[in-house]
Amino acid sequence: MAPDEIQSRTLHRAAELAGGAGALARIFCIPEPALRMWLAGRPIPPEIYLRAVDVITEYDGEAVNQAAPRARKSRQAS
Image (cartoon, rainbow, N blue to C red; front, top):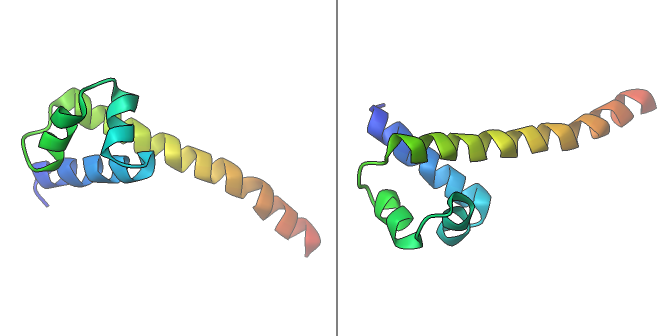
C-alpha cells in the first residue's frame, strides 16, 4: 500500500470516528472545505495526517478503557 493511500485511509477513518468531515474539521480547527479537499484525494499535509492518527488513537484508547471493566466483570462472574 502506498504512503498516500495509507494517509487517505487514515484521514477517512478519523472523519468516520469523529462523526463526519464537518466534525473532524471542527476538531482540527480548520475550514471544512480544506478537509474535504484532502478527503477527495489532494495530498494531505503531514500535520493533518498526524492529527488524524491522534483521533484514531484516542478513539481506540477510549474503546479499550470501556471494554476493560466489562472484561473484568466477565472474568469475575466465571
